[in-house]
Structure formats: C-alpha cells, structure tokens
Amino acid sequence: MKKILVSLMALAALMMVLPGTALAVDYGKQKVVYHINGGDPQQNQLAMRNIQNHINAVGAENMDIKVVMHGAGLNLLINAKENADLRASVDNLKMQNVEFQICNNTIVGRKLDLANDLYDAKPADVVPSGVAHLSYLQAQGYTYIKP
Figure 1 (tube, rainbow, N blue to C red):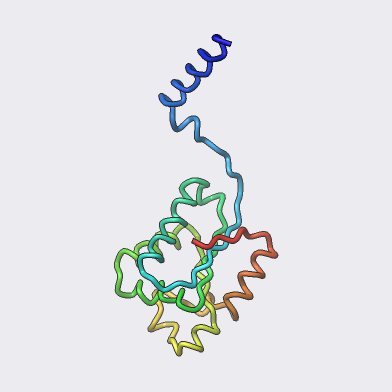
Figure 2 (figure 1 turned 45 degrees about the vertical axis):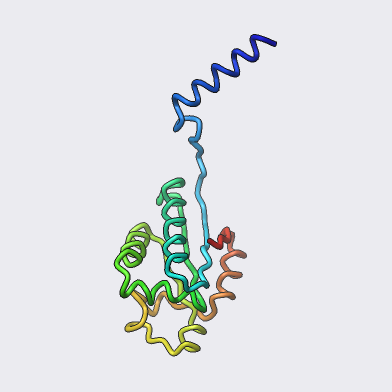
C-alpha cells in the first residue's frame, strides 16, 4: 500500500512539473456550428473568444466552423462596423476559415442592408433561415454549440 501511495505522489509531482504534457489531447477533425442569436456586444465578443479557444485547442486545419446568426445575433456584425475589437475578432476568425452565416429572414424583418449595415457581409454568407440552417448543419454532423 505504501508503494502505491509513493508512486501516486511521484506521478502527481511529475504532472505538476510537466503540466502541458498531462493535458495533451488529439481531438481529431471537428465540424462545429456556433449559434449566435443574442445582441449583447460583450456576449458576442466572448463567443468570438470561445471560437478562437476552440481553434487553439484543436487546430484550424482540423476545424470546419460555421457561425450562424439570426435575430439579435446579427448585432455582432452591426456592432463590428464600429467596434474595432469585435471587427478584429471577426477578421481573425475568417482568416482561419470560420464562416459567418446570416439569416435572410432577419435581414428582411429588420430591414437591414447587407452591404451597408453588416460588417464584411456578402450575399454568399446569407442562408434562407438561421434556425432551419442550424438544424440542417446538425443533420450533416455538425456539433451544436451555443456560447
């Protein structure tokens, strides 16, 4: 029993000396959809950080990430036009192949102009329905995350 206790203590000491080694995990390839439907700028910035942390853990080369925005979630791109930090987060994620997808129902319902009201939004980013697209992506094997 004493040998087991000493061995466990030695293992614990080794894990404290080599913390990165104990946490190394191969997450493999991942397909993920992040759902954004809230308009709070701080919450949206936190969501962008969550996505970046996810990429940092798994590796951009192992990720297929889509961010689907509808309702107040479009405020992320509206606020990015004026908020340099949020704009930089969007740009950085796009450079890592994160796709930002925008609900057409919300664009029409809120009478938004794609080119003038939303930061770096293009017609190819628009999906007919944000919620229908979330369901579609999940059926395609995407993991759903709501930050």
